[in-house]
Length: 340
Image: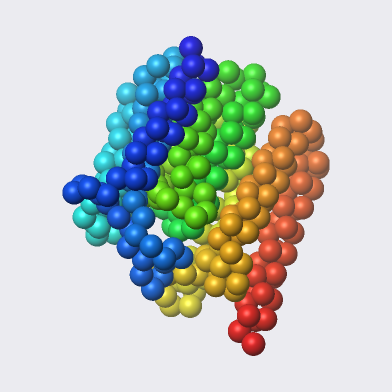
C-alpha cells in the first residue's frame, strides 16, 4: 500500500503541476522578475501546492506516516509551516512573523512531539550529550534554520526540486540499508511528490514551488534527520551530509554577508549558484553540476553506512570538505575572470 501511495503522490503532483504551470486566471500567483531574479519572465509560483498535495495524500494512504512518533503534533507543525509559507506567497509577510511561526512549529516538533535525541552524533566518533534542554534548543534552532535555508536556496530553476528528489531519494535508500521500511517509505513519498513537480521546474522553468514548497521541504529535512538520529537509524551528521549542498551554500553565504555588515535576511544574489550564473554559466549547466554534487554527497552517505569504521567515515568527510573548499575557490576564480 505504501508503494502505491508513493506512486499516487507522484502522479497527483505531476498532474497538479501541469495544471498550475498553465494557469493564468484571476487567482494566479506569478513571480515577476526583478533586479535580483535569475528568471526573465512571469512564472507561476504555486508548484509547492502540488508537492504538498502529493505528500498529504501519501500520508493519508500510507501507514508509514501514521507510525511516526506523536504523529498528530508532527502534522500540526508541518501544516503550520505550510500555512505561513503560503500566506507569505500571497501577501509577503514580515520576516519576523514568519520566523515566529517557524519557531513555534519547530517547538512542536522538538518539544511536544519529543524529537530531541538523547545524544546527537555531530561527527564520526563524536556525540554530543549534556542537559536535555540544551539538546532541545539545538534541535529547535536547527529545525528553524533548515526551514529558512531551503527557502533561501530556492532561487534557480530545478535546484530546490532536484535537491528534494535526490535528498529524500537518498534517505529512502539509507532507510532500506539500515532495515527501516517505515522510514524508507515515508521518505520515498516526499521524493515522489517532488519528482512530479520537477519536470515543470527544470530549466527553463514553467513553474516555481514558492515558499509553500521550499518551507515545507525544509521542515521535512529537519523531521527526517532528527527522526533518524532519535530512532538510532543513522547519525545526525550523516543526514545533514545528504543535504550539505544547501547547508554549505546557505550557511557560508549568509555568514559572509553578516561579517561584511549586510543583513543576511535581505534578498540578494550572492549564493554560489547565483554567482555561477552571473559569471556566465547557464541555468541548465549550473543545475546539472549541482545535481552531480548532490549525487556525490548521496554516494558518500551510502558509503558511510556501508563502512561504519570511524576512520573511514572521517576520511570521506574530509574528502567532501576538500570538495567544497575547491568549489568555493573555483567560483572566486571564475568571478575574477568574468570581471576582467
